[in-house]
Amino acid sequence: MNEKTLFQLALGLVDPWYVSDTKFDTEAKRLDIFLDFKRGHAFPCPECGKSGKAHDTEEKSWRHLNFFQHEAYLHARVPRMRCPDHGVRLANVPWGRKESGFTLLFEALVMMLAREMPINAIAELLKVTDHRLWRVLKHYIAVDLERMDLSELTSVGVDETAARRGHNYVSLFVDMDKRKVVFVTEGKDAPTIETFAGHLTDRGGSPGAVTDVVCDMSPAFIAGVETHFPEAAITFDKFHVVKLLNAALDEVRREEQRTEMGLKSTRYLWLKNLRNLTNRQAATIHGLSRTKLKTARAYRMKLVFQEIYALPKHLAEAALEGWYQWGIRSRLQPIVEFARMLRRHWDGILRWFTSGLTNGLLENLNGLVQAAKARARGYRSLENFKLIIYLLAGHLGLLPT
Image 1 (tube, rainbow, N blue to C red):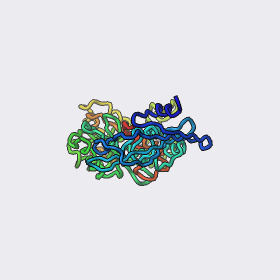
Image 2: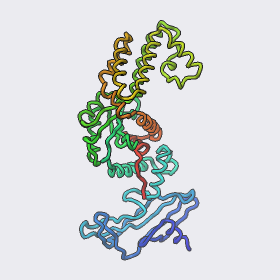
Image 3: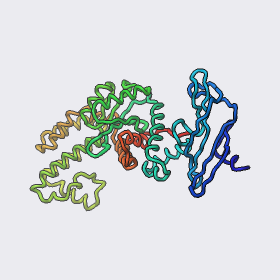
């Protein structure tokens, strides 16, 4: 078996393709493999599949997987066949896609590395420009998004994140049942909901089939959902609601701390759950919570509010109503404002006891998005940032074959 036959078997070449020559440069650390096809072979038209003889050829090259530590390249005369319906067309080759410059195996390597490494690091490792790697990601993610089937989507989570500090937000839409990002778009306003509704319809889904949406209390998101998903009930995640109550509690503490020096350096004791405190911290907060401090009273109200979420649905509304009356008469202004917020978002807060939807999944995916910022460092556009989000959080079934 000579080296041509060996490389032909290694590349998986089948008739009419064969290895015509090889060149190995030890100084340049480069292997070049030259491919050719048998004379007289007919090739299928890339448009319609009808066969036609080669009209002429074009010289093409593709970067392939390294041969040990040496860069490897394939070169071939690619036939331009004559189709009776479409005229002269450049035939497809089995080892690479049109206009790529990489073999499919090389692109598969890029896609796998992109899940684990920053794009700039991959470019340095493989000795190619990051522009070319972004084009590979864009192609395969676009293919996967195009074939995405959202016909069974009924439960949606919505969240936003900043692409860059202070501006340029993107909104993420998540299939809460399949636990994956299904759409990413720029902005964080009502039109983003409309854009998602169009994306859903284009991929076999129906806005009318969506029964539940979990989101934060953004007026833009709420208005968008009510307009474009009229059958969906909005759930406000319990962790988001408790976070707002914690913010009110902390505001009470900051105000009272001006006159009560004992509150200095106690912020996290009031905000943390008891199970996350050390024994010493738990003893400290237990003692403080039994005082007549305004902060202690707000803290006790928080503990009671959290217990409501442990109640069954048929008891929850009465308990929430009782807490609302307590909060609105508390004379603690931040708590009063929180109680008013409860009333404004009453149905969405109560919906949690039916849907059980939480932002926990969205928070986890947001963690991946933050990792995406590091993975995409050096990205030149929001489009690249969106590509990385799809790659890391979209569970896309993309791999070149």
